[in-house]
Image 1 (cartoon, rainbow, N blue to C red):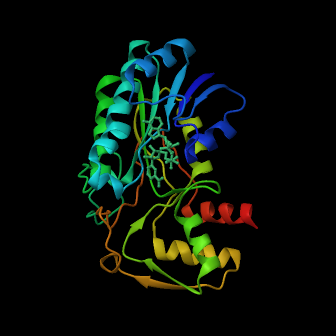
Image 2: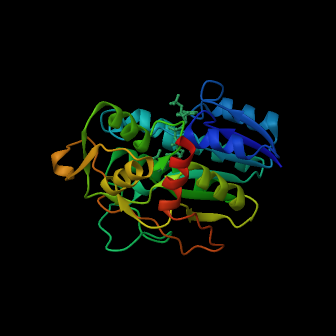
Length: 275
Ligand SMILES: NC(=O)c1ccc[n+]([C@@H]2O[C@H](COP(=O)([O-])OP(=O)(O)OC[C@H]3O[C@@H](n4cnc5c(N)ncnc54)[C@H](OP(=O)(O)O)[C@@H]3O)[C@@H](O)[C@H]2O)c1
């Protein structure tokens, strides 16, 4: 299969390149293809003529987005719109990745694909705008919402906690935000399964189950035998520019059901790679 990949230098882009070696992948990091540039996106798609495009590019600076919405919408709404326009024109399916932050976090139960989004941050609103553009402009879409991504090489929460464990005897971690930590290689594998199905639609693909940042840190330190103390704190004690959903656990009721391993397996594999 011929695949065009955008955002190739990011966490997901890197994992996909590693996984898709049996396919013919043309991978564009941001330096080679800015998805906010429609002419460039059109030219890349037309030159490559892929069987499918995977858009792994995104503006992910959740807090910075509050003061720079233009940058967030450029990467997360205009960019996906351009990729959708360019692919639809040539009837090429598009895999587009979205976020649990499209939800408000007030649900008493895990969010499924048919729950109503209600983003509470600029980042979440820009990701929802990107979804809506893809959904309306290319009917051959797989929109995949995921959450709390981490991999060994990326900029992410577990890597930050590992760096802090080297410097401190104690870390304070938020215990009242609950989500679905997702190990990027697990997500990459799910995407490769999904793109072969031809079952276009919206999917939730995240580590099964839910946990807090605090519990995730405790698990990580335990798995790695680190003795740094982990102190639970509230979101109110850690004010940030962007509001995060208090509860954004994702589940799936979509068919075909694409299930990722439970989040505990993800953090276990992450730790094994480091040991
Ligand atoms: N990370 C998470 O916790 C999380 C949670 C839920 C959903 N997601 C979604 O999952 C997907 C993959 O995330 P990730 O963690 O792999 O993100 P990542 O590591 O931040 O990678 C995103 C890549 O996209 C590039 N990019 C940004 N703007 C671009 C543009 N206009 N044109 C082309 N490339 C651009 C970035 O380049 P620069 O680094 O040079 O800006 C970066 O290499 C994204 O859609 C993201 O929104 C992520």
